[in-house]
Length: 203
Ligand SMILES: Nc1nc2c(ncn2[C@@H]2O[C@H](COP(=O)(O)OP(=O)(O)OP(=O)(O)O)[C@@H](O)[C@H]2O)c(=O)[nH]1
Image (spheres, rainbow, N blue to C red):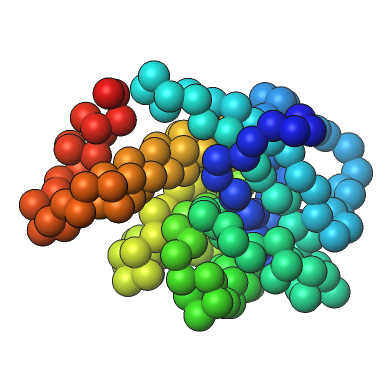
C-alpha cells in the first residue's frame, strides 16, 4: 500500500473487545477469525480501495486499541480523521457508555469528523434476543441528537458490514463534491440538495 494516496482517514474507536479488529477483518478480507482473542496494541493500519459510482475511493483505516491503557494513543490516531466508526457491543451496556465518551471527545476536538455508531455482534442476538443490553431506539435517538448514523453489524455473519463502510465512502464523495463546488464556484449553500451532490460527481 506504500505510496498510495488515501482519500478518507477512518478511525475505529470503542472499548476493548467490542470487535473493532473483527469489523476491519470482515470488511477488508471478508473473513472472521476464530481462536483466542488478541487485543490490539497501539493501532493497526490498513487501506482499502473501493468504488462509489464511477469513482474510486481509498479508505485508510486506523484500528485503535480499545484498552484504556492506550487512550492517549487513540487520540493521536483520530486526529484529522474524516470519519470515526465508534463501536459498542450490543451485549455489553458499559461499552455503550465508552462509545459516548469517544463521541464527546470527537465533538470537542475533531468537530468536522463524521461519526458512525456501530453496534457489534448482532449475530449473538439472533441466537438469543435476551442478550441485548443496548436498546436500538435509545441509540437511534442519541444518534439523531449527535447527527451520527447508526448501524448494527455482525463480523461473524457479515451483516451490514459492507453497508457501513460503503456509507462512509459515499458520504466522503458527497462532502468532497460539495466542497469543490462551493470553493470553486462560490455557490449559494441554501440552494443545494443531496441529489445535486451526486450529479456533480459524474462530470
Ligand atoms: N459472535 C461474535 N463475536 C465477535 C464479533 N466481532 C468480534 N467478536 C469477538 O469478540 C472478541 C473481540 O474482538 P476484536 O475484534 O479483537 O475486538 P477489538 O475491539 O478489536 O478489541 P481491542 O483490540 O482490545 O480493542 C473476539 O473474540 C471476537 O471473535 C461478532 O460480530 N460476533
